[in-house]
Amino acid sequence: MHISPVLWQFLVKWLNASALFPREASTIAPYADALYFFLLFVTLLGLALVGALIFGFAIRYRKERHPVAEQVEGSTLLEATWTIIPLALFLITFVWGALLYFRIYNPPTNAMNIYVVGKQWMWKAEHQGGQHEINALHVPIGQPVQLTMISQDVFHSFSVPDFRIKREVIPGRYSTVWFEATEPGKYHLFCTQYCGTNHAQMVGWVTAMTPDDYQKWLQESTSGMSLAQNGERLFASLGCNSCHTGVAGARGPNLAGVYGTRVRLTNGTEPQVNDAYLREAILNPSAEVVAGFAPIMPTYQGQITEEGLIDLVEYIKSMSPNNDRLKQTMVNAESNREVKTTPTVIRH
Ligand code: HEC
Ligand SMILES: [Cu+2]
Image (tube, rainbow, N blue to C red; front, side, top):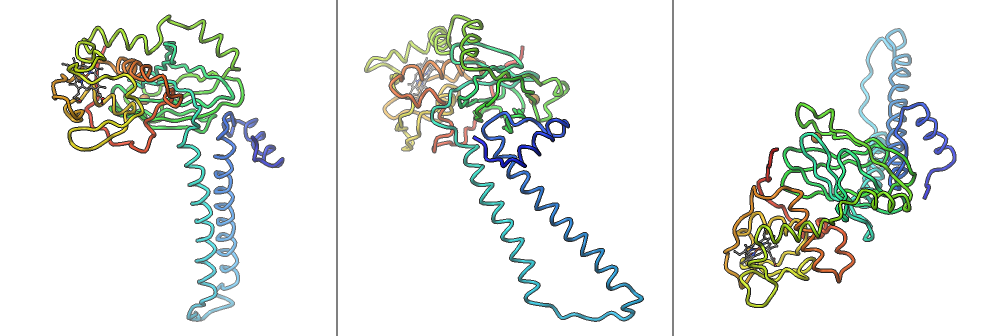
């Protein structure tokens, strides 16, 4: 997908070659750059206009030619012109920016989900099949990838300039970002939020591969246990299954099929069950008590790492296999509430 005219391609290639500009390696990159160059162009135009006027007026109205100042009362036409033209330019920028914003913030429904945990000072990526990697991320090209990210300690920011993506990674709250890589290659990954002493070392590489190579990589890097399987094990070892037995009349509600639905809470609200809801339900059960149940679930605050929480969420998701959309994270769904939990900080 290329929106760039020939001249444009030429400009971008030249900027890349002269190391002045990151590569355009995702589907969003040409769109982001188009707006960027438009803004640059308008700014340069404004600069040239104002500069020329300053010079022109300085020469034309210099003291020798106009020794006595002449008062001008104003001109409606002139004022209307310098109001309407900038207004039009700003409105164009606004509409253009808003359209781009929606494109950047709404992942395609077929996006594949990868989890990322940020911590001082590394990026940890977890693939559905349980493959883990540190300061590295392998992705297929030609396939939208959604990252569901959370921080285990302080604010971080996940940034891949060649993809034109950057998103805050926040303690206690899932955030997402998506991209579709277009060319195989290695791309720099940065933390772009100062996060402590070794912030500068919180960098890595995103490797974009053909789908075949990616499948091969997945097979070679497998740990044998998917995230959901890890979650199932954790569910048993933490004793969750003693209440959530899955049979009617159990002490805890049946969790099978619950993901993606709406649950009725004792406070009368009906939130959608998404990743954020599940995480909150585990860490802060008394905040949202399911109608018809007693608030007997203990809190697991501080007892489960972010990776463990991801495993549990994946396990609960896997118990709702009927919905394809569920393969993707739903934190972007319309019920994207503020989740107020204190982060689980587990230091090693
Ligand atoms: C002592 C029994 C008990 C244990 C142990 C327990 N839970 Fe619960 N859980 C409940 C009850 C009762 C509810 C419903 C009331 C509420 O929401 O607090 C619930 C609610 C939930 C919900 C929200 C369900 C919904 O339909 O919205 C999730 C998710 C959940 N538990 C997960 C877990 C996980 C994961 C563990 C283990 C780490 C666990 N629970 C351990 C009793 C328990
Ligand atoms: Cu960081």
